[in-house]
Amino acid sequence: MSTTRKSKTTSQGGHREHARDRDGAYAHRLRKMRDNGLKPPITVGEEAQDEGTSRNVIDCGWGRLLFAQGFNSPAELLDCLREEHDDQRDIAVYVRDPQVLLGQAPGEVFLDPSHTYRLQLSTFRASRHQPKGFFIRRLTSIDDADAINRLYAARGMVKIEPEFFWEQRDARSISYFVAEDKETGEIIGTATAIDHAKAVDDPENGSSLWCLAVDPQARHSGVGRSLVGHLAEYFTTRGRAYMDLSVLHDNEEAIALYEKLGFERVPFFAVKRKNTINEKLFVGPTTDDELNPYAAIIVKEARLRGIHVELSDPERGYFTLIHGARSIRCRESLSELTSAVALSLCDDKGATRRVAEAAGVSVPAQMNADAPAPELERFIAEHGKVVIKPTSGEQGRGVSVGLTSLDEVTSATKEARAVSSQVIMEECINGTDLRLVIINHQLVAAAVRQPPEVVGNGRDTIRHLIASQSRRRASATGGESCIPFDAETKRTIASQGYSLDDILPQAEALRVRRTANLHTGGTIHDVTDIVHPKLVEDAIRLTRAIDIPVAGIDFMIKAPDQPHNWFIEANERPGLANHEPHPTAERFIDLLFPLTTARSARPSL
Image (cartoon, rainbow, N blue to C red; front, side):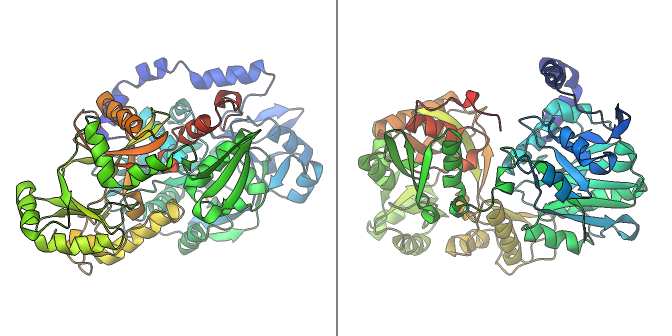
């Protein structure tokens, strides 16, 4: 999902050239503000005199922190909040009398529904348990900045121009830390440290933690805890008195973590402007909360374009989009534009395979799993490893991979029949699982999917590690992803010489399923920028052969930048939310309502 060690080394050596190529985007933003008559953000730690008053403001890239104690009146603070950029989110912190500020402009600002927690650093004791499998360091390259933005996007946070990160790399007031996977070099977490004493001459000698974000697909546990602890140690060595952070009032999991680390809730408040980014915080609960992420991303895009939405069955993802005289009913990314024949072809894996073969796309060898035992044995002997899957079904249910004996095939076939009465057997192709999202016969996103794995810590059982990983994946996906304790999981673990109740050695990685389906704990890694044209051509050829306007085409490949592929299946209802920040929902609405406002004309989010 993020940067490798190799790319980091390259970027450090050639950063100056890279930065020149970006043509000073951050400086351009400052010039644009001045051209529009707006005040530029105050430099970190700089006091700006305005009619004899000092204002304490720090630009964080995603917006500004306004330290309310540095303003002489609520009116002055309100005027500063009004200078907020359309694509950013300013936060007024340590507001002493929020009711007064809200009373002056109730239509413009609102009280942030978050709690402030404080850690007294004089009593803080560093954990004896050091991070396992990853380490924490400061931002060191422009590629680190890109990786942080990918984490922000995955968590629905406001992204920052990479040049801003880089320009602040040596600042004493604002510091960016990242957690890096020791094995892969991927950035799996980040946190921002604000030194109040350096930034705004804080007489209380405080500090704060912002923008804590952890990769929802991280293999390692405790990344967030380690980042918080690292920043606490960092500020302790600087002699700071406390470290504050803000957390949404209903984020029970995070609050439990902070309280366990010694944080205590303190009565400080934050105020924000009523803008599009903050909308969910001030409009209150809506029926959209019932939607899963795959329906919600489409509904949100439709409403941004002024398309009316009627939710008929939010729990199952059914809704109707209405614009003028045009009305289209959908279930997530499946719409009325997909014909019943195309839907049937995708649902029947045997039929889809025949269409793919006729279209000239490579397919694995296949046979009916109900064939006589001698024929099944010959097929297994010929291919070494086989896959059993139901002809109808989705989300990886009933699929067993890497079977090598008739007994395993017989058992897996029985499991698959619980999903579909007809079961097929295919040769097992070694490679990487690739999903291509094709909308209106054009590629929108491409990603490799990897089976779930856990990393041992030398203390916990494999069962416990899987349960912990499942909780993290479920939390990150709105309950859409978890690792089941079924026969496939047990078989995969047993093939590597372990059982669920064994303790996995320190730092050892164990694959717990062979399938990479996201609903069973798999992870997804974007490769849109490097996918080989041949893979895209074959996927588009398939969607035209099936005559389907929206599909997720799955290939088994050697590598995303190589042309070799074998068709696995076509999904008529691909999860568009899995491929953010690529414009999957935008292209879906373009298909359904081509005359709606162009994205470039809408306010930037």
